[in-house]
Length: 228
Image (cartoon, rainbow, N blue to C red):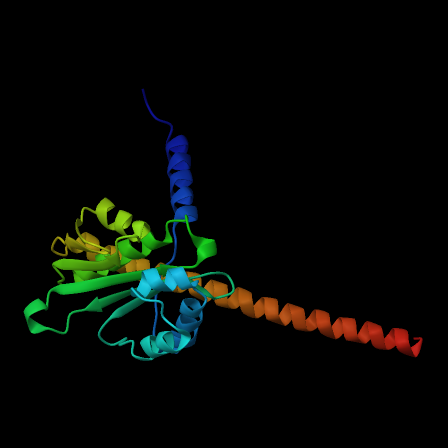
């Protein structure tokens, strides 16, 4: 039985559209994003700070962590909402020890109101692709044993999880980079940049629109007061 080309094209279009709607843009962050990173981490509840850092980090300790982020060596990823606020971020830290040159560590945090949307897993997948392309052979995750969300992501990826009392370590062996992983990262970066620029333009337009509305409101009030 012959398949109608238009039917096949329509099915492909619908499939691509569903994938696009489910896709979460992950953008690589730079030093200019330090204020947004700090704001995101400081917005975490005490328990979430404890799970992310392994201790109840204060605002001052978070500020020190943000100031010491090495954007030249490590990769920091962020997920932005429409207001260009970071609602989830990850830190892929590469080893500085020559003996562990092919190792990297992963850490993630997600806003409470954004839980259950798969953002942590999305950031993890993005970091894994980049780590592979950078020649990392072993990805390391250190987490509190009660951090079930992070450990679930690690186990689902095939990582070996070793528990030692209140703390757990997960080890994930990464395959060697190939053309697919390299193209995947290139496309991810390009699409995330486009998404960010669209959100930035939308935010600028919204601000201009609010300004115009405030001006119009002021003019109407002036006319009313003057009896015009």
